[in-house]
Image (cartoon, rainbow, N blue to C red; front, side, top):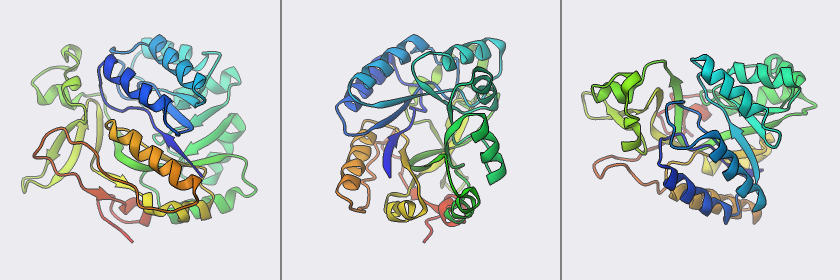
Length: 299
């Protein structure tokens, strides 16, 4: 099993993104996903910028995958999607079935991201026949589901990736929650989400962390941490453990996990993730993996 670094889900400035991937280039992490997956209105980086970053990372020895939007809402977004998939250099992570269809029509291999509803072996076999090389297990499924579906897929010809650390993307909507929270409409959002580099924490009336609002995306308030499940994942045949970045500290986390695996050690990952304000409490969870409520800490 290897460690992968997922795409940045937040709206960061071009300088922040460039600095982030400069550090990634000098890390031991082998597989890097990059691209805008949440909102096409985030124009700090253009596709040409991501392509340039991908080329830099490839030159440093990384395997690079370009990630697509999880929600396609306009013809302009679909046109940009086709350009991204038919880039001539890098494989794509399809986060929407429209991206799957474009890759299939072009005869190009692709990876299915966690927002594609792959819930059974029949769906996975169909997608594999269309060119899917790897799939990221949907976040709400458990290790028991994974064990069953991999048994049904035997002999297996596709790779498996598990979202192992980071704030979980739970849903996407046509409405921008961050803009609405600031009294703005989506059409005149002023890209306000750039002011919230880890999203906006939503709490219950009892002041308990509930969700994290990231533009049109709803995330978990707690971050999933399956670092202590690496041996179990290897037993199941998982190929990649994904770290979803939320700060520069995520690079150190992924790098340490990479070194740990290289030494064949199963150590608990360092869950030191920077917060977007001093009053916010960072909590780890792993409930989905154990077939429980996602925010729980299962065993």
